[in-house]
Image (tube, rainbow, N blue to C red; front, side, top):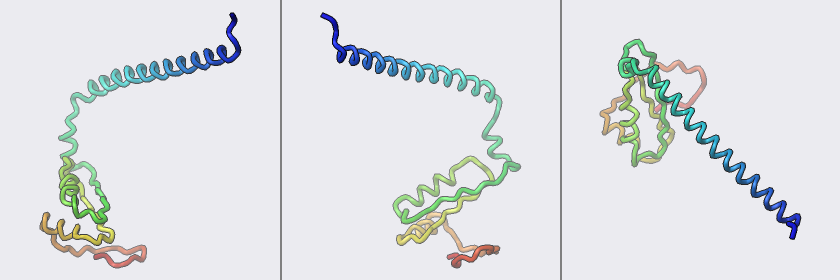
Length: 131
C-alpha cells in the first residue's frame, strides 16, 4: 500500500512546521547565550565606574522631566514623589496640568507647599496666558 498524495503533503507540511519550530527555538537559545556573554563583558568593563558619583556631580548636564497630569487626583502626589526620587543632581520636574477638572493642583500645593513664582517668559509664539 503506497501513500497517497494527501498523506505526502501532510507529512511534508508537518516536517516544515517542526523544522521551523526547531529553528525558532534554536535561534532564541543562541540569542540568550550571546546576551549572557555580552552582559558579562559589559559588567566587567564597567565594574570600576561609580554611576552614583557621576549622577551626583555638579558638572553633569541639567535635564527637565516633563509629565502631563490630566485628572490625576488619585495618584498625582505619588507620581511626583516618584519623579523627585531620582539620584540625578541637576534636574527640574515640570508637571503640566492641562485643564484638569479635579483637585490635582490643590493636592500638589498642599503636599509640597508650593508657592506661586513669577517667571519672565519670552513669548515667541502667541498662546493663552499661563495660570
